[in-house]
Image 1 (cartoon, rainbow, N blue to C red):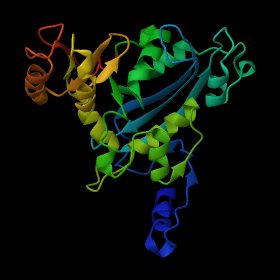
Image 2 (image 1 turned 60 degrees about the horizontal axis):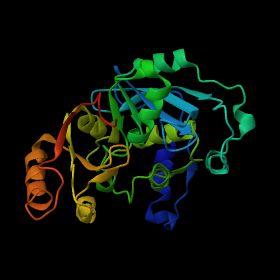
Image 3 (image 1 turned 180 degrees about the horizontal axis):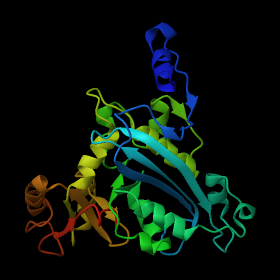
Image 4 (image 1 turned 90 degrees about the vertical axis):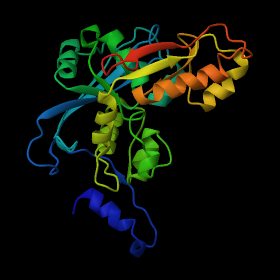
Length: 293
């Protein structure tokens, strides 16, 4: 009996409502799912860093693992795990050490294998992280030869609530799925992400299939340039998020949602009495190669 079947049975009423959580241990090689060896390759990545600002901080740990998947979005094979640490050249803060479990001594003299990391990243159809808006900038700053690849996001491009989960945090998703892991270490986060992408909804569709469908489509980033400060709560409620880099409220919308979004902005942000400092929003076309930047 495989682990997922065991967990499912233990969650059944006959087990008295007790849920048994298993440590997550991905097995390298064929998963036993799908039909044969999938022809497509994806690579899951995660990095631990010295802070939140990619322009001034450094990556201290990078992990990635490739998977093969078929046309239905079923992961058929899992590659070996790759993980590197890197000396940032400065002491870690207490917060970072506490969060990651890494110490200065763990990193002394360590360095990412740049050639290997770039080769692996470029070998896949897409790169996925569980917060690509964070990881992509860090990885491309450290590995510029891996810039311009197609990126997806397992957090933003899967409707986890529609799949019965209560949130989007990776550790919480995993627990609700019957597993636990030690978070905030790059390799563990990568394995947790892969496990969650194998999740099937009530119709049997994998989270990977859902993510790829959403991630392969072009879209628009709508920037509410010049919006008055008093409208921040309305923008937040509408799904806009503050971009600290650009100093603007922004939201990504699908092609079909662009016109309704423009109409809402015209009525609520750029009307005569809204005190906007611009005439209209800024629209930026987004593709899988430019998303999350």
